[in-house]
Every structure is written in structure tokens, then in C-alpha cells.
Image 1 (cartoon, one colour):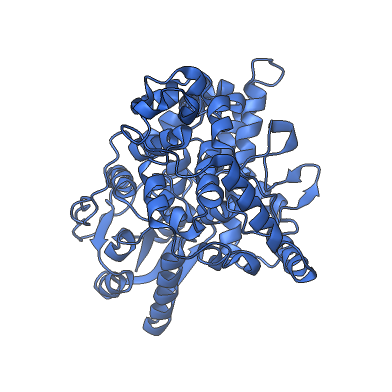
Image 2 (image 1 turned 90 degrees about the vertical axis):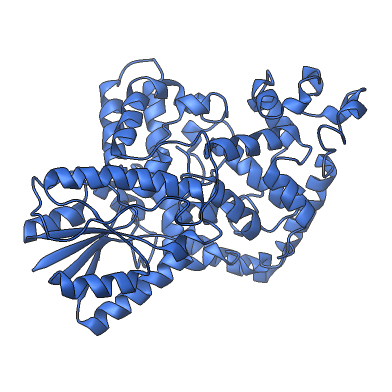
Length: 506
């Protein structure tokens, strides 16, 4: 009998418990299902598929070297599995658990129902530190840490070949995806290992300080987030490699110890935020605290939304960050938070609409992190401090020389440095604003004041506090002990100012 290994967001052979188990049992059919309906969703994009396609090509070669290449099929999962199971003598389907979006959740329910009716066993194995059907967050951090300490699973030495056509990996055009991202990261296991190696030996030395800057973070951040999102590298590999590096540099004063500590904390946050969506899938579509469900119009202002999405808000640093993200598929964590916060507070746009825009732009889109963070930056969780970023101040703080803003908003090259983040204050602003570059869509200070009043007005009353307490009970971090602590915010020892992140860029 043959075991079918269904690859999802785990596109590797090393530290892949499911593949190892299947290989130990006998013949293996490694399968990836390209689901056109999934890739037509508003949170999917061509840049993401291009990255995944490269990962699949690399995985296909890895598996072929073991004896059995990856089999690729295009279509509905139930239909693909219904065809393969009887024709390939399959009696068991194995896969890693997936904390995906609402669509993949519903798809898995359909697959489970089909498997029961067809008399086929489908068994899912825990992936990373996310725990399915978790009853309480008490003790979760310690459980996750214990899992990260477990030995990595070695790749199978050999796979028996099967008489089946491997199939072809479709192009973005085949899937009717036209999104262009000229500077996006490349996919594949070798790319992930190369990034991990360079981060741990050279690039990461200034990680703690540089991660807040879109300029410095481009180099000093690990850039592993898309590889962790699609599984060319396991989180356990990253945790153990950084732990080894931390031990290696212990006692030095070159910044490495703090960098590794911060990186490990962010790897823990990754699982922490994914656990939230696992525990409550409705976070993708409904406000975590119901009092905020109708805070903003569900139909966002189309003019403001279009301006924000295009990087044409007239707020220079906001526009520079959005244009950079559009071109590269990546942005450092503080600027991700700022983009969502400006959209939510200053432009008063609903997080579901703007969240979908950013999801498409992020090559490293991870639903479990993205949607809880979208709400966190929009003030709809009921348990987090309302943080309204001042985009002008962020521009001054994170781009003090203006080189980043000028690169991505070249319309402002003639504006003197002191007015770059506020060109409307320049005496000659009329020569640019409304001509080559738009007038600001809102008054930054006035819009923030109105937004703050509206958000805090909802928080008054016993009913709000009662529900907020339940949100905290279910989703807030826990301190299990001095060694086991995962916080919703960056640990005090490693932060300069409170902040968070979308898609956890690492």
C-alpha cells in the first residue's frame, strides 16, 4: 500500500515529520495540489504564486534525487484525491496541519468529510508551535518551547519510484495572475538556507537596532519570512540555528547576543499570533471585540482606498513605504504597522478591505499572523493599546536623511530636506502639490484626533469590559514562568518603543 503525503505550506524534505513517517512505512506519493479557486481569492497574488512555484521546482528536484519526484495536480482537492486514491493503491493520507485562511479551513473540512465517506484515513500532524483544539493558553509557551527543542527530523534516504506522471507546475499566467513584483525574493530551499546562513554570520549583527528602519532592515532582517510562510525552512530549524549562534557568541560584546535574543523572540511571536487564528478562525472576517464590528464603514471610501493602495496619499513616507512594498513584496515590521494604522485611523478605512490589499502585496503573507495583526493595528481587538502612528514623525525618525523617501517618491526631489515629510509646509509647495504629487488626503493631526475619540468612545461601559476580559482570557499571552513568556508586544528588554508587525517579516 502507498502513503500519500499532501504538501501544503511545508515545501521541504528536511525536518518534515510527515514525509519521514510515510517513507518509513513504505512507498510514498508526494503530492502538491494547485487549487485555482484558492489563487483567485482577494488575499492571493501573482508574486506569492511565483515564489511558491520556485519552491515547488526546488522540492520536485529534491524529491527526485531521493527517487520519487513531487507530483503536481491542478484542481479541486477532493476531486484530485478522489482520482488518485483508488488508482495509486493509497490507504493513508498524511499532511501537516495548516493554519490558513477561511477558504483552506473550509476545504479541509470538505476533504475530511470525503475521506470519512470514502473510507480513507487522513491524518494531520502538528506543524511548528501551533496547537490545534487548544483548550487554554495556560502553559502554551512552555509547550511550544519544548517542541522547538526536539531533534529535527532527517529527510528520508530514499523513496521508491512510482509509475505516475509528475505533472507540470503552472505559471502565473496559467492561473490568471498578473501581479508584477520585479524585486521580490526568490523561493526554494537553497535560498532559505543561504539567507539563514548570511543572517547568522554577518547580516544579523545589527538586527535589534536596524529592524525598525526600512533602509537598514532590508539588509539586517533575516528575510526568512516567506520561507517560513511556505515552509522551505521549518521554524524549528530557525530556532535551533539561532540558539546555536547565540551560544557561540556568548560573552562577546559585538551585538550578536541581543540580535539572536530578539530574533528568537520574534520566532515565538510568529507562533503566538498564528495560534490566535487557529483558536478563532473568525478573526479573518469579524472584529475580535464585537463592539468594533461596525466602527468603520464596511464599504471603504473608494478615493481614499485607491490613494493608499497606489501610494498616492500625499503623505510622503506612507507613499514611499507602499511603493517599496509594491515593488519588492517586503517591508520591515514597523512600516507594515504604520501602513495599516494610517489606513485605519487617519483614512478611516475598514481593516478587512485594507488587510486584503496588504495580504496580496506581501510575498510572505501568513494568514494566522496577518489578520490578528490587521485588527491589532486597527484598534478592534479590545485588548491592545490604541497606537496611532504619526506618519510625519515616522518619516523623520526612520528616514532622517530622506534617501528612502526620495528614492520611492521622486516627485519630491526638489523639496528641501526639512520639508520632505511635510511638503505642504514648503513655500513653493504649489509648484508640486496637485501637479506632480497629490495634496495630502487628510490633515494628519486632525484625522488622528477624530479617530482616537471614536475608538475610545466604544470602550466605555461594563458590557465592553466584560467582553474584553473574555478576549484577553482566550487570546492574550501568558507568563508560564521566568523562561516561558510570549508577549503580544516586543519583550521589554528588546524594545525601544511599543510596536507590532504584520506577517512578521523577521
